[in-house]
Image 1 (cartoon, one colour):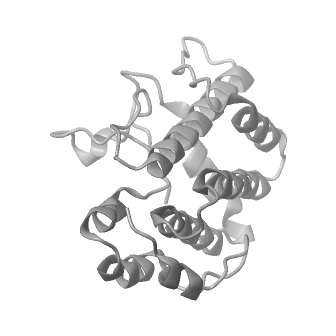
Image 2: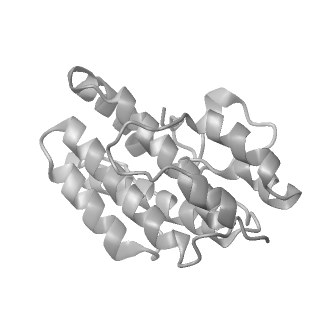
Length: 206
């Protein structure tokens, strides 16, 4: 695992809520030739969705959050997947408790990182504005990325963290106020409604 001091020092600083300076796809294309082969290969695993992708499963079957994704070989990616999976499972549990659905038995969220994730979920679920709830969850994601990145600002983690932040900023561009409710309904119906084994498909974040 190498140091990417020059690459990291040239990247525009990202601020939560700003217009992204480039697309996530453009960033992938930009940095891939600059990384060693092992680090470059891991770029394909950097995504907001922590779902386990099973071989032979159709796209219509949807991702599952019942299981942890296999180890990637990068602690940052693995910890991010664990954090986001915990967030989604906590959302599902809160949704089940709020709606009191009969026969609903969401997968139990992992113990780590329980406190921060649970607090973010409760705050979002309690927010009346669907758009504000979604933005609050993304701010929790942003803060988690900063925490998981670590103190070394020039290793591969800075590249993966930067990519995740660009993806979050792209999502913000898609969240127009007049579209907030439809985005909220689509996202929550897919993520919160069907995360237990054997349930109906869970949709991906756009």
